[in-house]
Image 1: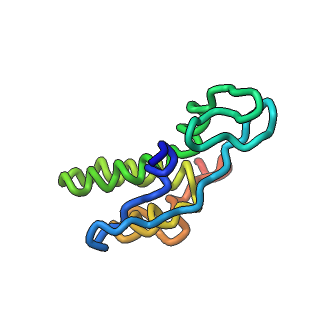
Image 2 (image 1 turned 90 degrees about the vertical axis):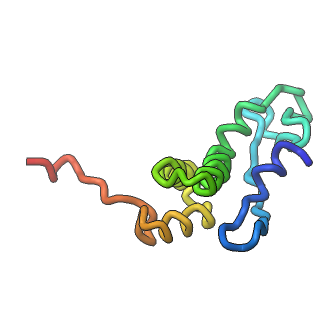
Length: 121
């Protein structure tokens, strides 16, 4: 299992340990624009180490999985914080958004209302 596979397979709460496979987000090399190799975390063209870009691109999925671990350990507030970060990093991460909504951490739109500058007294 590659490093990417570990975060592409996210656990689904309440599904008896079931794992949902998600589509891998692309991580292109900033120099070559070639998709990085998900096993070596390097650009196949220039061989540049792109592991830091993988970490940034997969931050939402990593935070989601950490939130599940926090929930299992009874750390509800930590889990909510991690879920908020996961949704902020990857708004389309449906499992994180659904879990956050089920815990009462956000509405279906997935965020708290943000005031505008003109809204302040």
